Length: 289
Length: 305
Image (cartoon, rainbow over all chains, first blue to last red; front, side, top):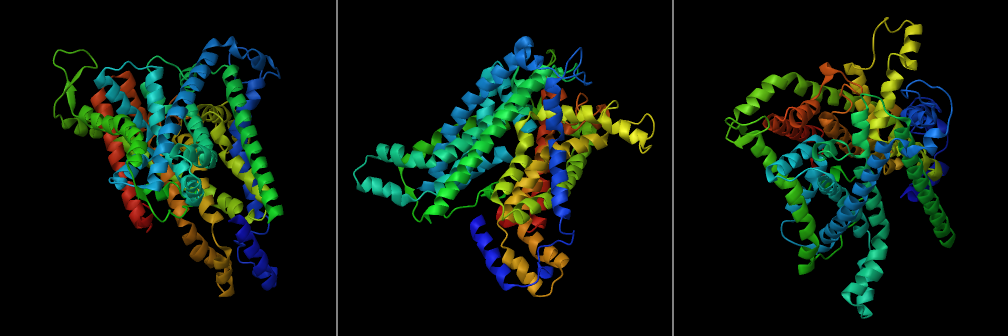
């Protein structure tokens, strides 16, 4: 996509002379937009930088004023036992909800692209609505149901709730991958007398894997950071966002900043690594072509 | 049906020529569909039922029985009309601000950085970076930065822009600011996805036909990026109108900035007035559906939904 457009520009650039007629110049000067973008990025990063910086603060009673650099909070993360417990709960919930949502959603995505069935429109609507419903309504609805059914709220109800809102996002992500898959590959497998199970596990699944991994990571992130739905369905159980919410009025310990910063660094490293890998792959493909 | 608006970031691939009919489809669909019915549809119905409940006679606080008490809706709308209007007002302003912030940024990433894939990837990473740090902590970070002891208030005081004793946090302005900041990535990404696919030859054709850069932008670029703008505004407006973190008193708000989400939370989790919370949720959902339907119709992108 980008490459095609790039060559198109390159070709037309040769044909059309002076730069004064370059059409996509918005009239904000040559550097205006670039300067704006840099400022916009700085703005987006301000609270992130703040959170990370204050994970290194020497804390007395509150973590509001800067008192000097220390690594203590990082070394003694679990001194604030509640923070660590909440973090553990969040990871547990996110892992189980991700596994459930990814399995259910991937199956639905394959069915939606590959098969004809009745109630297709209804199924699509059923998948779309949870994404278009405000979280507070999803949370209150589930809580009302658990109340009516007499289900005690706790980690289990949080997992059930998170799985629900992750499924739609998994379907959207995996569906694109299934649609771009060449059916001829699976046909070749069948022609070579592979059983349906072999075709699935040795051809379809490996080809879908990048999409499935992307969907799982998205689910994990959505579940890990969810507060609104969790708040309605957690009872006494505490996840990391819920801990932050309840601690907000009395002051957040620096250990919470440590955990948020650590999660941020891991996520950023993951993204950068995957982009570097994609870049290398692109280069290799470019050499072959 | 309605996926288009939300999945515009993933180019819709060509559907395979033949879709087979097979019992396998049922096997693949059923578990997920059942799950969503059980934990999305049934709760929605139970929310509607709850909204009509009446307090149990001689019952404790939090005990309700089903009764067709539609007056619940009249009561909540009368009691919480300011909160309802405030929610949609804040969300609308935040959506417009996020759009103004995001469009030039998305244009820069999607069009200007097109020839530099590495920079483009870096820029996109920066746009989604806020997702990687806890939503609540980044909102609290803004609270500290904008607080009376924070750098912004002292700077504005020193420049005598802000009157002595005035606050930033706890005002409508800071709630709208928080909503805008937190939903910017949801606005930027779909617009970026539209602009990234924009065929620049159309823009060039505008120039060749002697249109000024401004009118080319308004009559070629903007209409072609409209699908992204529509999904971005929906992805911002819907969650923003139901949000109750930014408006909460321990974050960027104050009691007099409470939004509908705050009221639903208070009624459900603290006051145990489940029917009121349920009725308010249904009102929120209904208003959103009506507004979205009008908006989509007006913006002429019905084929999206």
